[in-house]
Amino acid sequence: MERSEPSSGLIDFLNASTERSESSSRVSAPYTGKRTLYGDKYVEVMKQYYDYVKSRIRIGVEGYDTSLEPIDLYRALESLFKTCGEVHNMEIRRDRVTKALQKSCIVILRGEGAGDKALQLNGSDIGGRKIVVTRLPPGLDLSTGLSTDVLAARNVAHNKRKYSEGISVTGYDTSLTKDDVKNALTNHFSTCGEITDVFVLNSRALVYFYEQGSNNRALQLSGTDLGGCTVVVKALPYPKPKGSAWTRLRYRFRSATLSTITGWAHQM
Image 1 (cartoon, rainbow, N blue to C red):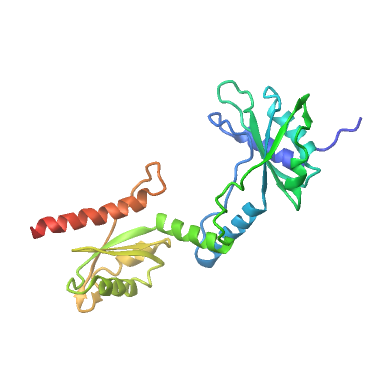
Image 2: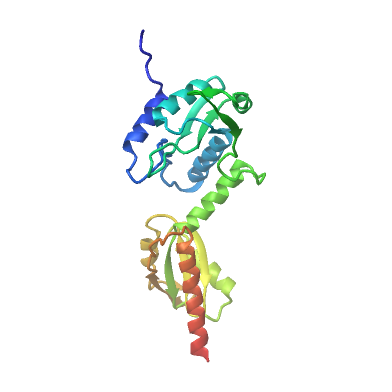
């Protein structure tokens, strides 16, 4: 009997299974995203990703023999669901201790009507057992009703703030209103890079940039004139993440709060 060539999806699955770390129980191919981009290109890439997520059909499968080898289950599921559309990926996990398959896995399909066709396979036989097939949510919260354009723009804005770096500015005219100071600083440092935030405190202001190299360009403006005053620019320390994506933002607002409290203490 002639032996058939393995599918490209199976090859990807095998490569991912071989390269995974020993501490991980996941045996499906990991997602590899693009590097961070700037401006409209960044939004465009994120929109393409959200469009891709919306096009995926995630199918949950249970009831199979958990003593099977992952590759045997993969082959059986691929053979079963390829009649529904493109079998784009699978997420098959094993218990870290027993090495047995977890009782449920995910098959990701693409193609018109693939979800409805997959549901018709409920009760199909896999290795002598009847499987239970269900349709799962898309994997990201796309139920807000927002378009992928808006979702992409919102995600990019969040990431730009999260990964921005800041400077501390002193020496400006503190008799001005906070709005006037903010506008003046924004105009003064606009040539350094994309500004994500400007916080005007009692005795200093914090300006945050997203683009690489912006901080260095801003530091070169230390000693320059701003409305008849000489500004002093210093780089803010860049905090290391501590298990939360919001660490940098929390650090940013904590710095602002501490400065405000210190200002009150000096005034008392």
